[in-house]
Length: 410
Ligand SMILES: Cc1cc2nc3c(=O)[nH]c(=O)nc-3n(C[C@H](O)[C@H](O)[C@H](O)COP(=O)(O)OP(=O)(O)OC[C@H]3O[C@@H](n4cnc5c(N)ncnc54)[C@H](O)[C@@H]3O)c2cc1C
Image (cartoon, rainbow, N blue to C red; front, side, top):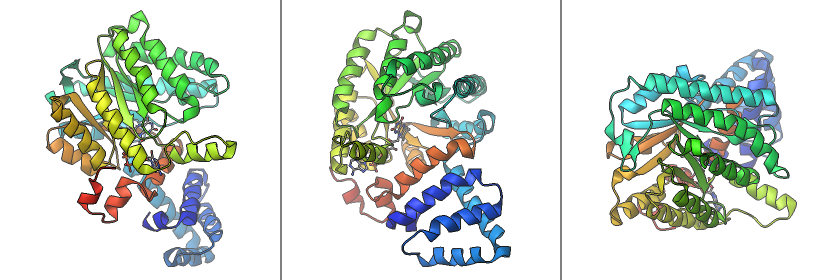
């Protein structure tokens, strides 16, 4: 990972490799692909050159394949808590006992058939039921179970609209929305019945309008006026995110729902994708291109969200100490309770921050992906991109930047 963060070509080669590993038929196959991708590098760092020499020897090829495949699995397990909700429950319970709530993400995105979409919706329903059932025996954790707006469900699942329909297309958003609505409505009904929370993730910009309209439209239905607890995501890397927030707050203030909408504020996980797509099409970039501009916008939106309570519940999702500290400080400065601010991290990326925040008594929720390696590839590659990006807070922290610099205003 360290080598990859310094070398763009190596990073691209490793991502392509990680992407094909689940489809390889044998360890030799794994080694052949690794060698193939690395051979395309203009310059080969010494440790990589040594691995390639091993791949020249037929007998050693499966050993190299085994080591490389084990490396990919090891990385994946850092981010993915289990292959099924049943397997994940042990980790979720242990987090809860240590004062950390969770949101389960069923891996799998961008479905291409109706059957896949039905299967994803079934898996989400199964996870909701399993979690609600198992979480009943967890010990009380008042900080995680209630804020000043009322009770907070123990079972919490994050869903992706692109996995709920194969028809989500920017040129025909209405079709995708209608198709996804059939499945999302079932999940909302189930969540209401068993007292669980459904959070709808935000993906790339081409589906944003469809996702937002879908969620706000469904939650406006009279049958959902008194539940379930639900949430959406706002991406601060988008230049027009302040206007998006106007729309969300306008809706939240007039919705009259008994359980306020939770807004999870993130910077956004598709930055490279949005920029490359805009360049290819000759469009102006929809995302900020200077990291400090994105960070500043995140802070402004944080303050606006905190000011908008009780119309919304606020969840700040970041591993950046400055962004998190800003939320905590602004909340206290304006007379808010710590318990009315949720701080969210990703499993495997924010573990230390999660422990530190929980030890200080904050309400922390960890986003926990569940599923197998094949379904998890897109997720894994996004997390690797985040880890190896030179401008990421985690990278700067790991490379020894001083705390004063890390905490400086953007
Ligand atoms: C619990 C949780 C749930 C999440 N759910 C979603 C979700 O539904 N949808 C989603 O898109 N993301 C989601 N994310 C991912 C989130 O967007 C990334 O983790 C986040 O972008 C990393 O930001 P940071 O504040 O931790 O780190 P930082 O290092 O402070 O920020 C990195 C981010 O800054 C932005 N950035 C990087 N370089 C530049 C640049 N040159 N100019 C402008 N901006 C730049 C990018 O967004 C990049 O990801 C979630 C994260 C968490 C913790």
